Image 1 (cartoon, helix red, strand yellow):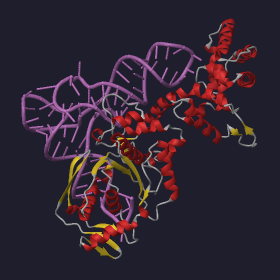
Image 2 (spheres, rainbow, N blue to C red):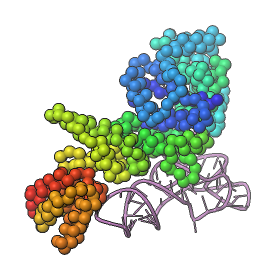
Image 3 (cartoon, rainbow, N blue to C red):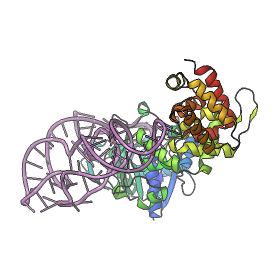
Image 4 (cartoon, rainbow, N blue to C red):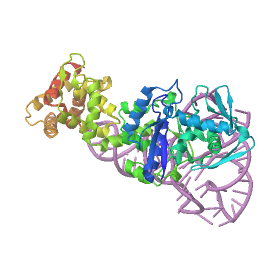
Length: 440
RNA sequence: GGCGCUAUCGUCUAGUGGCCUAGGACGCAUCCCUCUCACGGAUGAAACACGGGUUCGAUUCCCGUUAGCGCUACCA
């Protein structure tokens, strides 16, 4: 049975590149009906921190990459490494240097392995110096612990970034010294920044959690990440997790580094936003609004700010298809949910500060006042009626109204905006704009 | 520097010797839809790094050049 693992070290948050590695491992395990294990490589006593561990775990859960069985910690498996290293010492395959134990590397030998994506890779041991197995502090090195553990857990495929290609031969030498059979190695291409060097902070956010905070959806993230260094073939691009699992095979993994393109991620997230049901979006919106004090409690007064979820849901439905992220939707709906209308100066200048606009808005407000069943259709009927009477195009009423009510010249179909904004708020804002903002 | 890996539109990629006047997607441009923006639809500009082979025929196979990246820690 296929058995793979994701082995992060808790010395930082979950990097986008690591998340993609975890995803490929998970996808492969699910596709093969195998197991996906989680192992924490906390052998760097100084840099490993519990808070990082928590964040990595929560990021994996957010993505939905659930692992099988218990989480393994290398720091709790020291006996194993000690035992293995003692064996090598007794067999004269390693030697002591101070407190450190070092593996002897015989020079002039060709180490070859068959990589699942690169094919045959070989290197002369002349290029490899003796390898530290156990550090002076009693902890195993990465390569040593990795080999011992992967073997102990019966890992069949090691899927990891191709920055590990160079130390694979070293690990194979460790397997050999221990008399163990190495797993199949599968080195996947690195995720790159726009300058084609490995993705790092200076290229933008690399913390997966950052994308969650910005309101990206996990399904979109999974879809986007899966297409970095892998493709299902043909023209398909939007694939559900189920489809991904069904299609994912190692032989379709590419060899070239992939630039992380935020614009494409953003596009893809909008595609998912539009398709995502309200019951998923509502809690996310709630969380974001709560943070801003728009819902539950008002920021200053401590006063309870209760909103009707059905109403918020209606707002979400009218905005989700044009929102790039949840945060973007929050930005767009500020004028709906709060009385802080984010007036855009240019919009005000071109749509409100024009001759005759004040009178029109006031007239429209008067018409709206008479509507008893407040909905998009009635607001639209009133608008078209008034426009006809004033002998102007409906657009000449629509545009100023949008700016007066939302502060912006862009947004959803006006009458749907008015419907969700509510009668009272709409009329109040029209009158306010007519009174002051429209002054030419 | 040494070693390794890689090389298709700006970006993600399809392509495994003829189906390629190289396909899709993002981004960009124009147009349509339209109350604006977005969505959607249509159209367009945009790539096989270079040089040798192999072959009747190379984007696809081989070699070299160039370029990029990675590794070269008692970090992982």
